[in-house]
Amino acid sequence: MPKPPLPEFFCARASSNHSEREFSRVHLTGGIQYGVGGGNGILLSEILKVHPNQRGVLADLPHVLDWARERGFLGGGLAARASFADCDFLREVPQGCRAYMMKSVIHDWNNEDAYGILVNRREATPNNGALLLMEGDLPEENAPSRGKSADLVMMVLAGGKERTIEEYRTLLRGAGFALNKVTPTGAELNLIEALPV
Image (cartoon, rainbow, N blue to C red; front, side, top):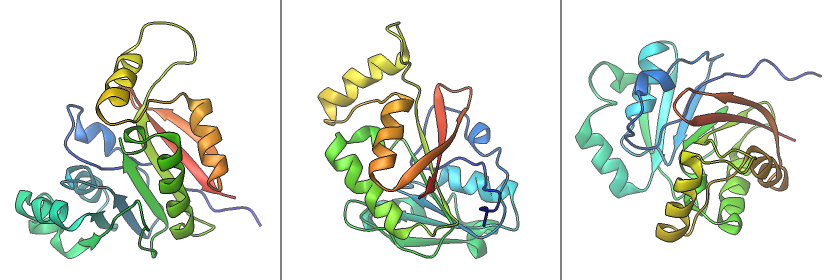
């Protein structure tokens, strides 16, 4: 049986220099969306503003969620459709959503840790669900790029790395996902849609 059409949308982690409106141009098909490692919730709030029939869950460490509540991006008129869930994505991710979103999370980690994070996502993602990653655009060819500079920064500061699309494909495959679609956002980031296999 073919899988139903999946949403195209963008994930939230923390504030960025990019237009949050750019990332919230989404087409959702229903259900609850999880922003895993969602930081202050600004992007999830933009998604909920654009899609008034959606609900969202901001999932992060307790102290990060306290900070997100103080910032108030998911308060006011969004409070009835937004909730918060304690989550340590290195250990497990709460179940109950069709789509799990992460922005600028995987590049923080080396391959071993990134693999573990993605395995946790796969355990939570239903077979008709999706994982959506928003990650930097590292070109395959040997040419100057912002992604290559970011790769050095991630390696030195966090022990992580930027990855090419093929590297993401391999990492996702090992964790039980198939890379389905890559959509450039116009902000030197790609939306990577992965489906459970």
